[in-house]
Image 1 (cartoon, rainbow, N blue to C red):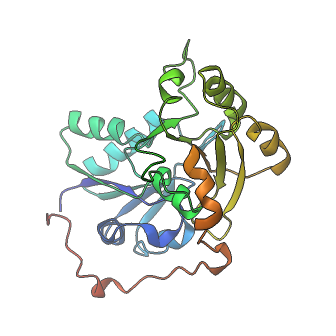
Image 2: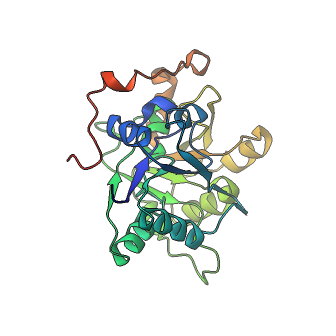
Length: 268
């Protein structure tokens, strides 16, 4: 069988929020390259014979640089292996899927990108925050709070983002002061509701609610662990009524493979 890479979204943290196709492909992989956001229960779904390679990157701590990860994927596919590149959330939302897919395309190697549930979508609703709500929010935007190192200036238009009803900031915990200050300087009201959801969808989920102006100080005292998602907008106020998720009740289980009507690698 010829090699192929599958860039798979593992979902926002809870193992059973992966897609059925993503799970099927993971179970058939020869090699699994995974990051630190992937749930351990999900790795257990890979075949016992599959080689598991940790390539996680966290704030200021990279197991491998992105170029090395891309080279590793290309090498395994070129060697004829089925590669599952398992990424937290959705692979195309700040997940380097574009870079890895481009390297595979340039090498003339086959690949597929399997969408996943992004934490930008899942974290807010697991905290009782709908991203849109009639009469309150007709649009939302997703932005990274952690831009590429070495840039001379920010490529983020905070003035434009300040006018969008709901704003979701990923990887912004370590730059919370700068993010909130930029939005306030751009005219966002200080009393705008805000929330940080830490380790969303898991049994360790914690939610911190404050306002745009008070969030940096509130976070300083809360000491929330990463990963965390910042949500800003009037919809955050709805969470007091819509907070449905009980982290202590999380139970993760998977059906046996043969009950999922799974397809093989080359099926569409």
